[in-house]
Image (cartoon, rainbow over all chains, first blue to last red; front, top):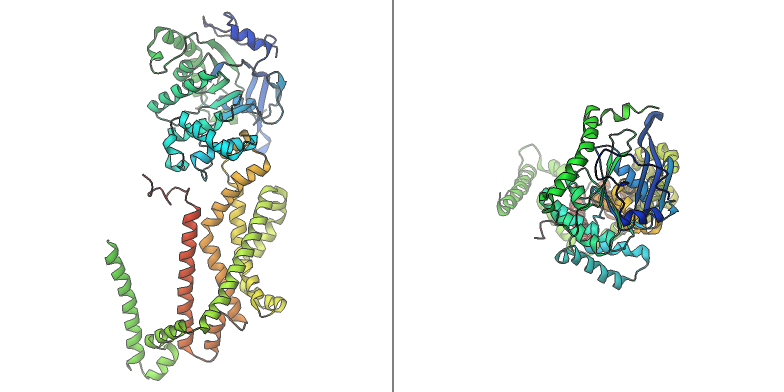
Length: 303
Length: 263
């Protein structure tokens, strides 16, 4: 997709994307793993009202790039992700996956949900194994691969547990294995570590970076935690307060890899980036609060 | 309270009840003993008759008939309930169109259908199966319908993102969810299948537990009626225990059922 035809909104940050061009970005202009251009998403609410969640979204994610999307609560971050997944159809604009327009579900993507998405009636092993069934993998092979993946996420001893017998962090690990076992080319994550406690989030963040760095996939990571976004990503995209949210800033994170997300927060470079991004994010967060913590978002959206 | 003490108290309730019954019916406290025994029998006579029946062979034939009717009513009613529950849950329009009719048929007291079924299916087991069916069907239908509709949207979206087609979604998501709801009403639906069988037998038949009770009643044999009721109660408790066992096996993944057995 032609990224340049939709100029990105720039905040005054020193480290913004279009000024310093990395090789990855040049690659993304050739064929982006995910490219949203001019995407609008409008929801129809009861009584004929309409709510415009996001508007004019231009976002391009290159293969191998880890991009975080941050923004105030209710700004439509998840909506954006659902459009990339094909779970939502944009009311305007287009979504392209590796240069091809997306129709229906995004078959090349894996999705990690914020809420529990495991089948409660299946054990951890069966939950991971079932992900291979649509691909027609024979049962014995699927079994072996599922065990291997559960081992990789540190759950070798928990294969026979049902989801309710696992902790929140363990369930996320199963979900991670379930997503990654299919080897999707694009990873979409919707505040996946949101419900977890602070320590577990750091452990899960490091596990994610560890798994991702082995065969870098394009990854869109939605979060409201700016520190988490910076620690994990190559790029951080800031969204404005809803309704009709858009992208207000796009920052590159030039921190070296491999990273340890607990330690990287102590570095000077981290603080500088944090300060810059927070400067633009804070404005949006304050706007969201001024609107009554999202309560008036629906009421104010009548066409 | 420990279990021994609880059990002792439970037994005590039965002993007190039997003792009161015995005293009232054997000693002339409230008038002529013969008259009182005609209306209330005596615990010794009821227990004795029950024991004789249970050690004989004839009662098992009647129990077998009742059991056959119950199982058939449950199986056919469940199958139809599952089929219609699924179809209606997946087709909004169908559910909306039939909604008032389903509510109306479910509101109808099923006992009034018994004479019609006897007319249509004769006095054999099928009129009782039909009565049980009308009771079981709605319970299973409503539960399966709810189960399919209330699948967690996240679980469903996740399954679709894993690339599942309709058939796989059915097998891994809709079906287990519907079964959960159905099993949660298993006690009720099995109970109603039995109610249908016994009521059907009571209203017109030549075999079964309901027939035995009706037969005793028609000759003012109160001992026979109470004894039949006692056997019926034992039968229901046995079936219920069986259902509990099945339920424990099938719903092992549910929180609360087995979480205490794993460390």
